[in-house]
Length: 69
Ligand SMILES: Cc1cc2nc3c(=O)[nH]c(=O)nc-3n(C[C@H](O)[C@H](O)[C@H](O)COP(=O)(O)OP(=O)(O)OC[C@H]3O[C@@H](n4cnc5c(N)ncnc54)[C@H](O)[C@@H]3O)c2cc1C
Image 1 (cartoon, rainbow, N blue to C red):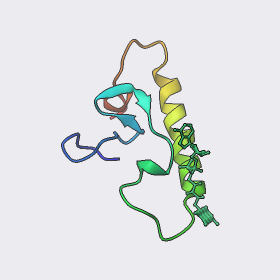
Image 2 (image 1 turned 135 degrees about the vertical axis):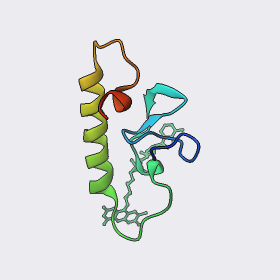
Image 3 (image 1 turned 180 degrees about the vertical axis):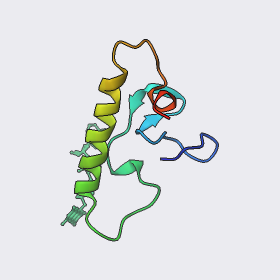
């Protein structure tokens, strides 16, 4: 995840930069392996990504992240 498509695969709301209708909301979104339990963080990021997706519904926009800046 990141804010720059040049250095990240997912935007800050877990969307693939190259396919904004695809969300990756599991532990593979992390850039590395954790040193502590990651389940709650995965769940929180998933809820956040879904809320962002919902806020974008019906807008015709595929760039909710940009819109929310
Ligand atoms: C030994 C161990 C202990 C852990 N203890 C803790 C802990 O105490 N607290 C904590 O917060 N986290 C803990 N974790 C980490 C936690 O389990 C993971 O971070 C979390 O499960 C990741 O969730 P996920 O959805 O990304 O992947 P997973 O939970 O691995 O889910 C991936 C799912 O995809 C399925 N799948 C895979 N390939 C395919 C396919 N081709 N088609 C269809 N389905 C597929 C798998 O069967 C699996 O159900 C532990 C991990 C391990 C290994």
